[in-house]
Each structure stands twice: as structure tokens, then as C-alpha cells.
Image (cartoon, rainbow, N blue to C red; front, side):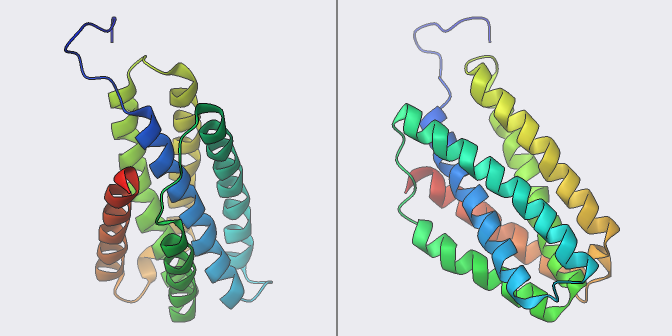
Length: 178
């Protein structure tokens, strides 16, 4: 973007913060559900705990930006609390590979979501863009780690990941507005 002119569409940074904070919160709840079910000593549990730490750091940053900029969180946060934990627990109960498939699906959608946000932002908000770019790189790393840990071996992988990805798209759409 070379400069704003009347009639130009500005990125909705408040909406971006709201949905990103909701997504990072949801990710921490998914991992909490998975960690509640998986054996603490399992390789998947150790991987999930590491990814959860990064998601918590992302959440803390978006929380801080929301406070600084006076952005309200989504009113759906209690829904994402329960839904995220349930999704995490359900996939972990299915298998470690299903838990990894859940991460694969979520992070695939988040990669696309953050990419769209970066395009929309252009050079309008360098601080937010830098955070999104850094977090996007970690989300892609989570997706790749999940695949290396056997996500694609999960029973019903195509169906499971398609369902999780569709749920993510719905959650993104709702969290932007509500």
C-alpha cells in the first residue's frame, strides 16, 4: 500500500485482533484437551506441550494488543473454551495420530488465514503484521511437526481434517464479527 486515499478500504485491524486472539485461545484449549487425555510420557504429549507453550505466547501478545488498542474480545469465547477442549480430548481419545491430524488441520487453516490478513494489511500496520508473520511461521512449524509425528496415518485422515478445517473456517468467520 502506497498511502491511503479517500475511498480506499482500510484493513479492519480490530477484527483481525479479535479473531486472532480467539484462535490462539482456541488452540490452547485444544491442546489442553489433548494433554488431559494423552499419557504425559508419550512423544505426542511432549510435542503438544511444546506447541502449547508457543500458542500461549501468541495469545498473551494478542491479549496485550487488544488491551492497548481497546478491542473487545469475541463474545463466543466461552463456546471456544468448551469446543476447543472437547475437540482436543476427542481427537486424543481416537489416537495420537488423530490428535496430530487435528493440529495439521487447524494449522493449515491458520496459515491461510494469516496469509490473507498479511495481504490485507499491506504496510498499514507494521507492528501487527510483524506479529502475524512471526506467529504464522510457528503455526506452519506446528503443522509440519504434526505431519512428521504421524498425522496422515490417522484413521479417516481426509474426513477428520476436512471436518476440523471446516469448523475452523466457521469459527474464524464468527469470531471476526461476534
